[in-house]
Length: 457
Image (cartoon, rainbow, N blue to C red; front, side, top):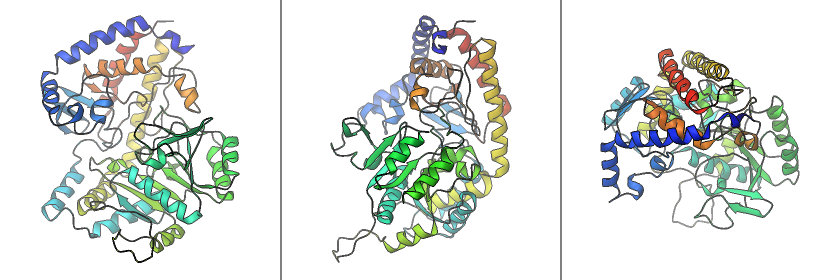
């Protein structure tokens, strides 16, 4: 097995050494976190800021382009891109200019601005869905499209795939197994997953069986799975799945919060998919927190007929609960328009594609020189480390080609050498701000790490 080529003794010894070096060289970040514990759980304002890392957290100070610096003076090449939310790089000039100008003229009115028309028309052209709404995060977008799907179909259930992550709303945080529906995490009610059905990805037979009962309102999925390394759909999966979903009277909702960064118009456009609904998130890579979702004209008419702001007045009418006071603010719409019109161009995506090829081919060359039968999946600028000879088709196969301790050791090893690596179940990604030299630096450090942690053939 490929994982047997990992030198576990060497990895554990290296991890101990690298953890000690990291702690020793980040005294200011450590002091700030300790100070923060007096007013914030774990010393951070949002739990992911410490929970996503096994090494201690750091406190960044500035970020420009593909690099950021922390309060201890260390400079990092960012290969994580704020988990895709920074795939334009830090402080992209058109976005910075737009939000600065908009903030000086009023950031939020609870009213639309002209930027909304420009941004949504651009999204419609790219993605192929004509009508759009903005929210504060992809979680909220997914919550709203599930509600819309239930109203449209008159059904309750949401079908998702193992390895999913669609946000922190109740409708997507459960699982259904042999013991029946159950929540994925603590803090949810015991019946939190009663509206969910979860099946393996790429399993058309399981999909057909799940749809047969006629109670699925929508199938909610990424076009390919991105939270458990990269898992591609089989060549015939989406053509056949789309036909099954339509025939069953269900809707297809594609969550492109991650995958919109992989291609102009996302994978919906690249692969010619025909969803009823699409979620975009991560602030379109701008660093500004917002999300959006698109819908067909037919769904838009249902949305219009069933939406209004919440009111304490009971007049007997009902509406889908959507929106939020700070959603679609003037600031957000200015950032979205600038990103779409000036940054997220077809030419920009093409340049990132070339960087991604350089990254994937470079990693596979490193593996080959070491005699490892590993591979590097690639989509756009996003790559990965698969510790096996074949790309996984589902989460079970993906887990068999992962070693989380190895991944987290790689992360601290790279951090100590000026590279901020991707999350432990993800992989490095090239952003619009990266250069060929940045990719080569990542490969240089990767080769050093592989040499220290594997047995040669």
